[in-house]
Image (tube, rainbow, N blue to C red; front, top):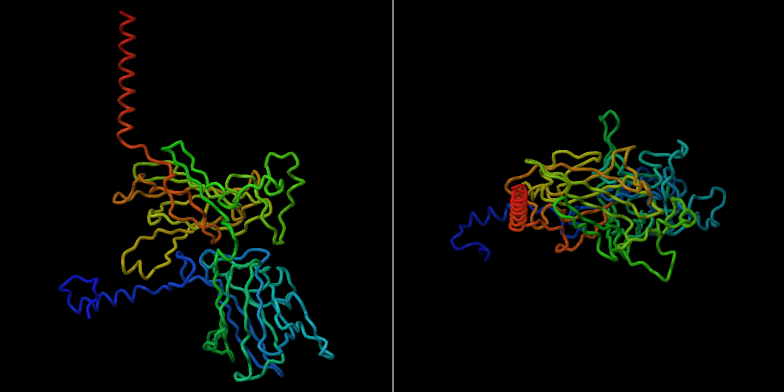
Length: 458
């Protein structure tokens, strides 16, 4: 039967071709949390490398397949529940936060006897005999698009009382991933085809005894109750500065003096403690929006064939230094980026197959700081901001300053969607008629002034 949405007279071969194109293009999943990164997830791979007398040795690897969401200090925390009475005899590249009750063991004491162990990464500088590949970064896991080499973390564990064959080993349950707060939801472990490993000379391939995967996805709604960033706008053609919406991330609590910090307070140093690795609630500067992060987009200049914008990211949080920060911006002119000053830039193509099939333009770009220069966004203060300028080439078929076209459609900071101002508040472009009236009035004024001067001289 022919679909109802096709016009009358369409042949069966055309229908088949259209359906083939449709299914070949739609390779993305509709169940992802993020429209700009539809397949984003953190995959945990558990490889049983070899059997021991009462269990096995496994390597656990975490892959951050999120394009622009990373985990920064104090780092990730991974937990699970054993299916039987398993224990961890020893670990490399990581450690459990608690040993638990190991009183049933005589002689050698396991590393952890808890039914629900919690594992953290080792800190940089750990002894070499405690390290494995991709470990010991303090739980920091960078975004895949920003730095894929550091988007992987691993640790090794020796598991006892677990069974010594594929039929006796039971998969752990109830995996949890905290960073260190909530936000990630992990699915059940699924047994998959065993991982294959190649030797250094690439001449021999070995295979894991058993492998299972766990997929964890992120939700901003689970991570925090209020937004974490907002966007303000301005332009050269309008004096109006559109600030972040009032109470975007909360409102000032005037009954509680310590709910925010006045930057002009003479006792500022006594109120603000230095940034630490611990997870502290944000202590933000008193503003109308009360957001820890504000991104300002300013349409700065236009040339004959190009136009220029300036981006400023300001940190209003006195308790947080943002290391390895990044921005994701959606704007229709990102397929014509000519130059980016003082930031790294990478185009993002979340629907690559659909773009190739349907001819969609690249309208999303990722920006982050230059290493050892501006990759650290320090806490609130005089230097608590980073900024850059972007130069775009004008596309004559689409370029305009009218109706807010020059402003971004969406901005993310560290993977969190920032709140945009309402569209009717955008700086408006003066229309041609008002400009013509003003120019005529100025011309008439000059002519009248000339007549007055001539009359007085005569």
